[in-house]
Length: 346
Image 1 (cartoon, one colour):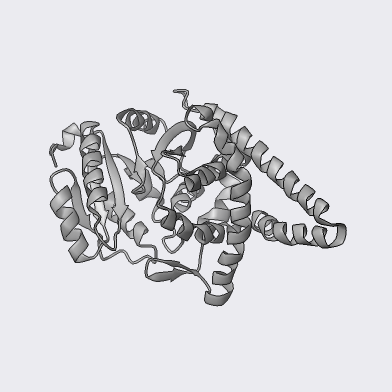
Image 2: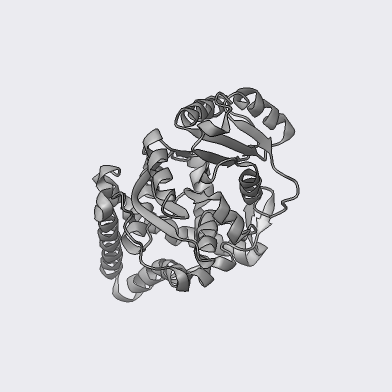
């Protein structure tokens, strides 16, 4: 790495990654991002679960700007990303760790705010916003705003920050699940860690490609199966609309769908206003809320097919039966109303 003295680092930035093939544009973009992180005071640890050929290409591009390592084979969870997380925690030389998916982009100011919060809390769970915004990115953004409008702890981010000592204290979280980003948070909560839900700390998330976004549709619905009321609601929407249409005519069905659409927009609007999220989300994206509701009402059947026909959902080359793990339900009793961070980031 460009910076090679541990004393120069204030935190470790941990990125687990796996690629079937190396893409030059992405590889170069990440190399520049790693340089920016190093200048922000981060030790960058990239745990790469790619094939040896792809790993070698990544290593040529990244070895000077990060610590690029393979996944420790002693970790054998079904979700390979979790194996990468534990490998990185073992190697991290800093107490403060910023864990992020490959589409997350922290600024130097973001690193500073998360680091300051970690001085007062054992874990920090921020929020994401998407930019740029293709139409599927707007639909995904509407989903994020609806979650912010409904859930006390906000939307589910693709990143969190935590103290290494706390991670070692609470032990391993369930690594055989699809929804690993939230599983680690609830595992910390379940084991008594002080979690800060920084609902006003917004971290940039790059939009997925359209192909990847389509692949994520049934997976997100599958992950939601633990939330039975939510799943039943989406399973029932289309049958209810069809039934109303058959019994009372098209106007009744249209009225029902209009009511659902208005509710979705209002919830997204509430999420937009919460913690001044409108500074990061353009207001017009709330109009995409009905499109997300329609997408989920269809995707839930796609996910149900995987559950019934195959007993799980594919993750890489493996089939994972569990969308969420043991900490999801158990941690609910421990989760309290989020407290405002003292730096005003909420």
